[in-house]
Structure formats: structure tokens, C-alpha cells
Image 1 (cartoon, rainbow, N blue to C red):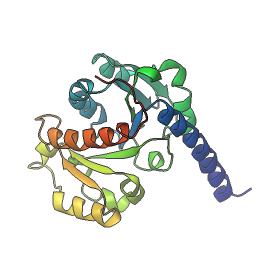
Image 2 (cartoon, one colour; image 1 turned 120 degrees about the vertical axis):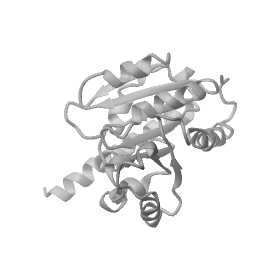
Image 3 (cartoon, one colour; image 1 turned 60 degrees about the horizontal axis):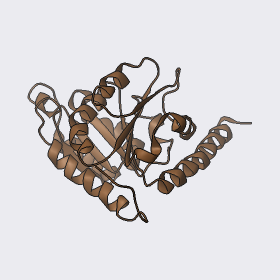
Image 4 (cartoon, rainbow, N blue to C red; image 1 turned 135 degrees about the vertical axis):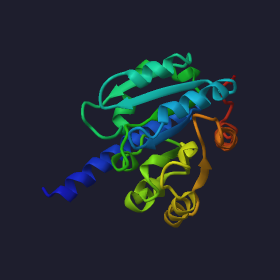
Length: 228
């Protein structure tokens, strides 16, 4: 069996599990976001900044994905939201089956919004669905403005691109215009947000967009669950 066939079989199997996850999420009226980036781009800091606002409107659950350690999960748990840690033991992404294994540890009947903080990697997470409603890509200024052309799939499959650490723009050679233009060449439908987790700049714009996406989904659910 050649490598291409093996990879296809793996992706096909994951797709089936992700579809099962999606059916369960729809049954329980849960909006799911898959947050992806390279290591150190600021995913956990980003969540720490937006969760207080999201908690005031939705019942939020978090899945933290890392190769090892529980440091990020411990940070998020201080915000008093249910958190489940997935340690992949070396795998560079979270897949549908790993998410499925968390269901017995998450209070799914009391969650409206589930966010997965994926393993830091610009390749593998883009290939594996978990049954999410949308993928969000976080790119930080110190990484360089060439990333859309080097890792196009991540940008192609994402609904939103967040460019973080814009407070560092005066100190590093990063062109916002170049990064955005190249990202839009790959995915013209990308929603773009410039933010700084340090200063808070841009976070309200993202939250307005994100809450609109969540509310649009929840409004379609028959009966729905009480929120807040």
C-alpha cells in the first residue's frame, strides 16, 4: 500500500468521525470553532482576552490541544469555564476521534459554544476536521508576512484570519498589506482582523463578527437551549 493511499484512508476515516461529531453538536445545539496557528502566535492569550465577553452571552466549553503538558488548560481554567486537555503525545494536530474522546468529560448539555485550541502547527490542523462550524487562523506579526504563500491550505480552509501582535509592527519587518493581499488571493472570502492581545486593539471587531456567526447558527436550532 503506497503512502498516498494510506493518507487518503486516514483522512477519509477522520471525515466520517467528524461528521458523527457534527451530528452530535447539532443535536445539542453547539457551535464549534477550531482555532489554529503556529506555536507562540498567541492562541491562549487570545482566548483569555475574548472569553470574558463570550461567557457573558454563551455557555462556553474549551478543548485544549497540546503535544504534552497542561499549562494552557490551567490558564484557561482560571476563567471558570469547563476545559478538557488533549495531549497528542507527538501528533501535530487534533483529529475528530480525539475530540470525540472528550465528550464524556465535557458538559455538552450545558454548552452553546465549544472552542478547540489546536496544536501549534501550520500544516496538519488544516487537513483534519473535527466537526466544527468554522476554522479560525491566528497569524502573529513576528512570524513574517510570507506565511500565506508558504502554508496556503491553512488560509484556504479558514473563515477568519486574525493577525495578532500588531503592537510589534514598528519593530519587525511585517507588511500587513502584503499578508492580507496574499491571504485573500488564496481565500477571497476570508474575514480579516488586526488585533493586539497586549493592548486590546481590534478585539471588539472580532467579537462582533464571531457573535454574529454564533447567533446565526443558534437561531436555526429548533427549540434551542437557554443561554447566558
